[in-house]
Amino acid sequence: MLVIFIARAFFQLPQKAEQFLRSLHQIPNTMQRPTLLIVLIVIFTFPLWIGLGAGLIGMIAGLFAGLVGLIIGLIGAIIGIFAALFDALFGWDLSDHHYTLGSTYMNGYVWFALLLVIAFIITRKNKNRA
Image (cartoon, rainbow, N blue to C red; front, side):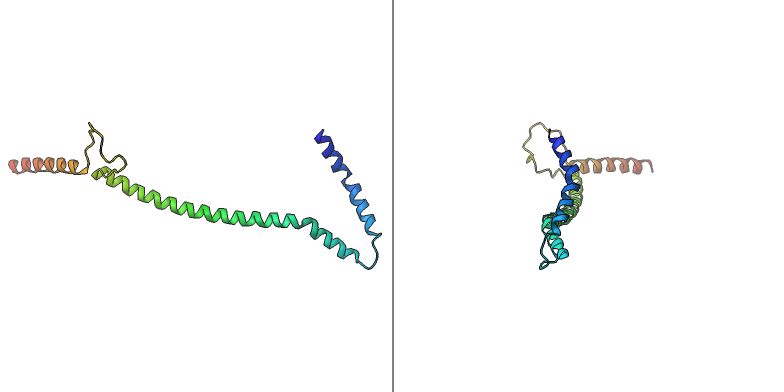
């Protein structure tokens, strides 16, 4: 039903426009017809101008906010990479405050100590051979 109504309105549009233009001929000469036409165009298209202007402002604000978000996200990713490295090396994960019992996690100090012990053993064996 709505489709039929819209179709009828669409097909009657040229007739309505023709009636409107014929009615312009009945306007007194004190008001110029082109001036009236320009005023009518401005009145009918003013909401369109407001909408386009608001859309343009919104698009610019959205692009600017997206750019700021991209920059902040990259900074956060870089900080996250460094934080993950320090967490893996030294066990600086502060999210659980290390209150877990039975954890087999060894932080970087333990791994570094094991690496030093292995290095000393290897160098001691090399000194004994020489």
